[in-house]
View 1 (cartoon, one colour):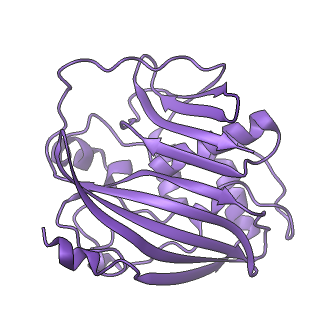
View 2 (cartoon, rainbow, N blue to C red; view 1 turned 60 degrees about the vertical axis):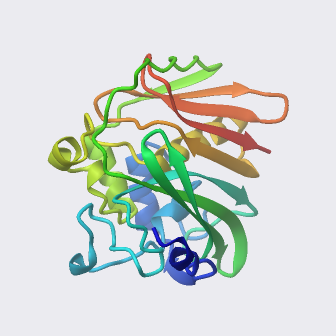
View 3 (cartoon, one colour; view 1 turned 90 degrees about the horizontal axis):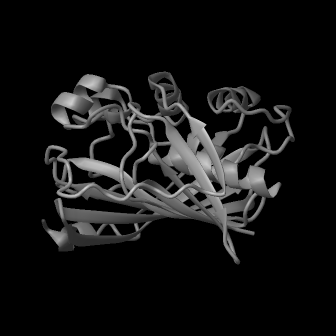
Length: 276
């Protein structure tokens, strides 16, 4: 990999804007089986910004996995698998329905590491989000790229995740995954194309979106506390599939609420901390 060439993408930026409509809020709420105000001026649901001002590429510009081909805003990392590795949200205010949401994105860093599955390339993106010009949140997004090796069972079974003080069990059905892909204009085939998942990628089922898990955990934290956090940070550790139930866990710590997702009797899939 030509690391020097890839690092020339550091500092590259793009800006996109979109009006948050009542219709999108209704679709978002229906997808997550939640309710909130949907009139202009009402406060928008947490993390709905992930459904706004997303990259739009024509079909002819998509790669084999359904993602936009690389080499535009994102660096052309020559590794075929691309996943969310984690990130951080710092909340400064609320997005309100009817406002224009603008996201300015900057490539912050490009690094190479080696993991148990081979080469890993991490791309870190900083996003500044405003709503009608008001700063509402800063986001750090970590994307990981890796080799297309078939999924294999680990030599030893990972330890099952502990149960939280608070738990909630959901079903990550294909319909739910499809709806979230549609909300975020995400063409990544691992979330809706079972044949591609099992025969090409070697997964046992459809992959549950990292951003959707983060949204569920952040909303879970806000519901338990009664108000949105000021900071939410998360990290993906292992994938979840539509073949099992999805469990949300939360446990209070002295300075935060610790949260995690897992399948029943499975390891931690995503871990997070919410701060107020």
